[in-house]
Length: 232
Image 1: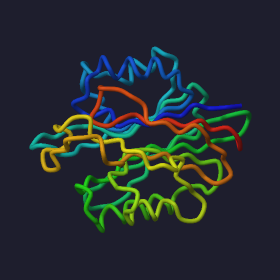
Image 2: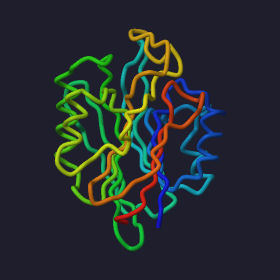
Image 3: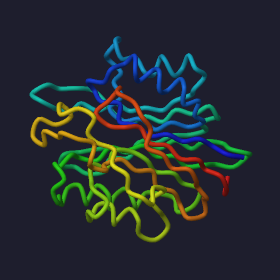
């Protein structure tokens, strides 16, 4: 059995028509999304994916961005049965969360995590590294997929923590994923898609293939996707 698994930070200011087009055409089995909102009827991605036949788990969190307070969070959507879920707080300061969904595949459980670490403008951060350390500490070491916007470059201490022991980055080429729009960060003011911030990690008992950075103008981040081929 083969699973298609995309991950995407859809941006709280995302262009919803383009987001819907990508998610519909992706025809994915399991999706990890970040910056999902539950209080914006013009960007009702939960309702849209529910209509497409997906179950979901989602925990919104209030956070401040550009002098506004938003309720957004990470979500996991699945065409297979979600048998249990949990949300994990990754740090007290500048708190971020990881959303866990345990999905039944072929009678066994695949542990799926969607997460979004604090944005540090590509600078070293003790808080971000703590968030990664906490995440690694709660992850099952087998049959696990961890995806999201880690807001960290491949050579950062944060990503090196993620690749210790039982996990690997499914993108061996470290292809850039950000930023489609300069408005993605008023401090960084990015002018090109030349930074990798988004990742899909897998436990080493899973075999993955065909990692791809997808095309879309829906968000400041590009979607990424991988096929899970063995270990299910």
